[in-house]
Length: 185
Image (cartoon, rainbow, N blue to C red; front, side):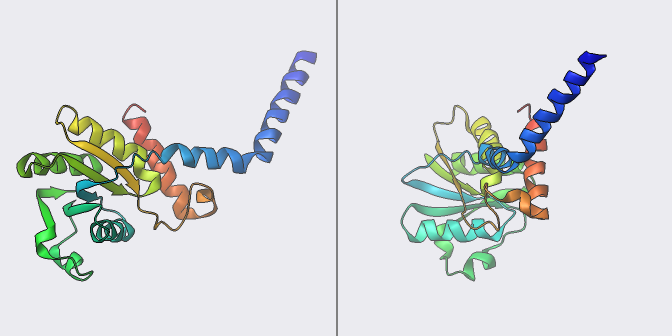
């Protein structure tokens, strides 16, 4: 009987310590998702669908000379979306088919890289989506000889340090962890 009390006391202590350290633990969980891999320069930047900040980041990278072209792989993006932010048509390359999921975006990007002879690409997505996107793109591009970089857009409404303070942050981070588990971590 006494052993149960000690077990209950130890469990209560662990839970209390976790509660007191929740901000550090939740920040660490967010930082685990932010798996960037920078490239100084790339032939093409690939903004993934899902957040307007990714498109804006891609445009800024082309304007800054980090990349020459933007490879559009999402299903809901058209030339007019880039025309509105002053990107010349010659700087855009569109994937051959629509992509509705990150795995589809990686497949469409690989085909476009092969077709256009791209040797380097910088994938732009949200910080919380970096780890899963990186895993899918590296798998798809394995053996292709294309150097890949991965960059967070920096235009998300929350960060790794405060994602749990908003409903959308909790939803998106939880979704990414579920996706990682689904892919076999």
